[in-house]
Image (spheres, rainbow, N blue to C red):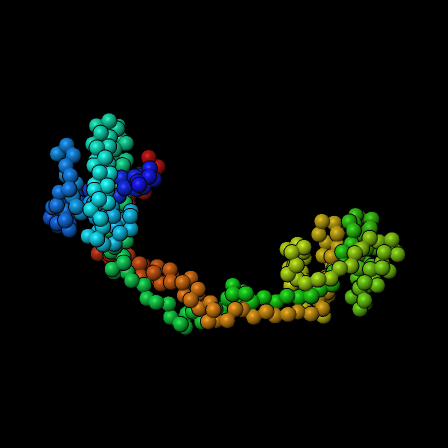
Length: 290
């Protein structure tokens, strides 16, 4: 059963096959079975080539010869309806609309020609094993490598101009204290709001700013007091765990696929520069503002 969606696809493909067939006739190239007429619509013929193209492109049948004749009849009937619509549209649609459609068809045809040409003349080299290894070694973080640091954190309440200096003074005493939990209790007794916490640097409860502070602090060292949103933060890194990247054998194929487009670009650049070398090209950028 041919649905509306399938019909639209068939209509587009049939229109394109007509375009290709016409271009083939202009170049005096006979496409396979293009001379075998399957139907005629108001003097315009539909060839077996068009039926086979629809089967190959829409239905996905790679060997149209083995398709049931009844299925081909259904395709032919759809192409007849497409032809009727096109004939009527050419009579009723405004000329500017038809001109726009012709432009889009020509553009599609050019893109197909370009694609076919580049597939033949700009085949990219395979990414070398050396390039894959180099990318793996230079980008371990993209393959799971990371350093997780365990930290202690002192966080004060909001400060103002009157309390900022005293709060910072109390916080600076942490530099020589080993037990920050006890220190936090001591500072609270002095009437300063402060909280003690600990965790790991990959915790989602940390803001990016605090994560940056922790990640930039060496093991066994304290950060400098950081003022964020009128609160002081002081971090100490107690340990770190370095997680290696995934094994190279597990990601080498992924890396090759990531790098392959660069090789394709190189190949296309070579073709482009070769074509431009002997071409007569002129730009008229002054007309862009019209």
